[in-house]
Image 1 (tube, one colour):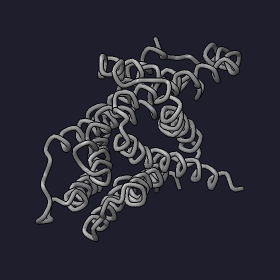
Image 2 (cartoon, helix red, strand yellow; image 1 turned 90 degrees about the vertical axis):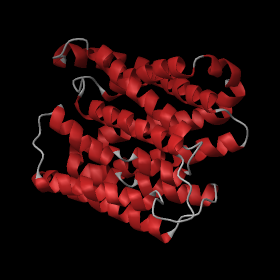
Image 3 (cartoon, helix red, strand yellow; image 1 turned 30 degrees about the vertical axis):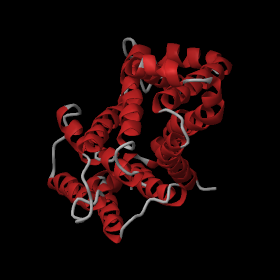
Image 4 (cartoon, one colour; image 1 turned 135 degrees about the horizontal axis):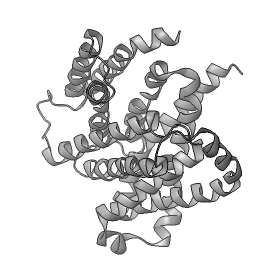
Amino acid sequence: MNTSLKSAIYIAVGASSYGVLATFVKYANNNGFGTAGLAFSQYLFGALLLSIVSIYFSRKAKNSEKRESSSKYPKLKLMLFGTSLGLTSSFYYLSIQYVPVSVGIILLMQTIWMGVVLEFFIARELMNKTKILGAGIAIIGTALAAKIFEADITINFTGIAFGLLAAVSYTGGMYASNRVSLELPIITRSKYLVYGGLLVVVLFWNVQILEEFSWLVFLKWGIFLGFFGTILPPVLFNKGFPELGTGLGSIIAALEIPVSVFSAYLILQEEISALQWLGIAIILCSVVLINLKKLRKSK
């Protein structure tokens, strides 16, 4: 199979696994499982599995670190940025308690334009007309996809606030995945990011975890959520993005939006209006527009 095609499949599968996550969290909520217990189980499984896997690759990882380490405290940096992953999950799962999953994913994907702003302030990348236009189009698409213009919709500001906080955290997590401590092996990087996520989940939910966590929750939902939320996506993204490039990779990763909306339609029977689908299509177009320059460079 062509290397580029394999990389595209890696990214598509990783994005799709992220996409179905919220649907199953809400399904578990509807069946009596608390969000704190689910989030803790997800990150606990991710931390345990990555720790076990890293043992088998420890010799290779140590050799890589000795040979390529070029920054101070790379593991600590990963843990600090990993907290953004835990906050993303916590805020996102809280958001879908108040708004439909189809709206929650749209709020989460405000990272599309937030990433442009972050690039300007942190990466010192100049803001060009194409990126500004793409960010504006993304906001318009969001307004449509979030049903703001539909007369029968009741806007839940609590859900919107949590969704936007999740987007801010997600933007930080995406930045870390592409830029922080890249000299370390994939498994090592993923492990310390998840450690940071687990730490912040414990601090965020604290006592509520004791009330909601059980090994039944861990076995029934933690393994599934951990595999599709903290193991599969980062590993597949790390395999796919270097070969395909950020431009085309980001466009394929936007598959997360329709997958999330469609899974909510199938499993939760959430109604998706034609106006919402139009908004989603506009958002996807904005992703293409924002990454157009990177796409041309990669070609």
